[in-house]
Image 1 (cartoon, one colour):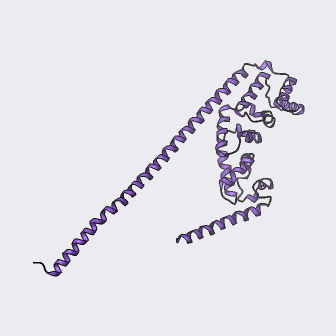
Image 2 (cartoon, rainbow, N blue to C red):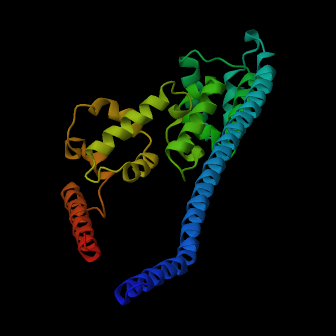
Image 3 (cartoon, one colour):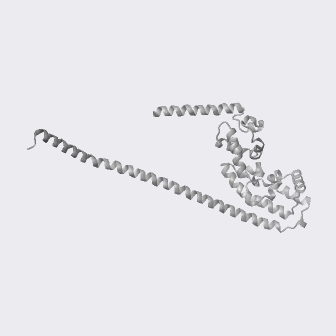
Length: 285
C-alpha cells in the first residue's frame, strides 16, 4: 500500500506530465510559423536575386542591340560618303552654303570652312553631308551645326567609340541628356579614355568637396562637363578652395561662397550625429 505522502507525490507528477502534454500542441504552431517565415524570406531573397539577374541581362542585351543598330546606321552613311573621291572636293562657296543651310550664320559658316581647311579636312559635299547625317542619327535632338562649329573633330570621330562614350555618360550622369552634354563639350564623344577620366575626376572632386558624397558632386560635373578635362591640371590640390574661383563657384550654394559651403555640410554632419544619438537613446542602445 502507498503511503499518503507517496500518493500525493505520484498525483503531482501525473498532473505535471498532463500539463506538459497540454502545452506541446500550442508550441508547434509557433515553430511552424518561424520555419515558414524563414522559408518565405529565403524565397523572397531568391526571387529578388533572380529579378536582378534578369534586369542585368536585359540591360546588356539592350545595350548591344542599340550599339549594333547605331553601328549599322553609321556604316551605311559612311558608305555613302566614301563614294566621293578626293578630286571632287567642294568649292568654298558650296561648303559655306551647306553650313548656312544647317543653321549657322554666314560669318560662322565661313569661319568653320576656314578652320576645316586649316586643319586639313577637305571634304566633298557628299562627304560632309554623310558625316552630318551620322551625327544626326546618334544625336537626333542636338544642334549638330553648333557642335561641329565648336569642335570640327567630331566629323571624323569613331562610331564605336562615340556609342561607348554615350552609354558611359548616361550611366555616370543619370537624368542628363547626352545631347546637352555633347553640345557643352563635343570632345566627350571621341575621348578614348573617358571611362578612366570620369572615374578619376569624380573621385577627386568627391574627396575635395565638403560633403564627401559623389551624388552631390556628379550633378555639378554633369552641368559643367568641361571639368572632366580641366581637372587634369589640379590633381595635386587638397581642398576645394585651392581650385580657381571659377571652378569653386560651380559648387557653392546660394552664391554664399566656399566658406558657407564648409559650414553647411559641417552643420549637416553634426545634425546627423545628434539625430543618430537621439535615436539610439530612444531605442535604449
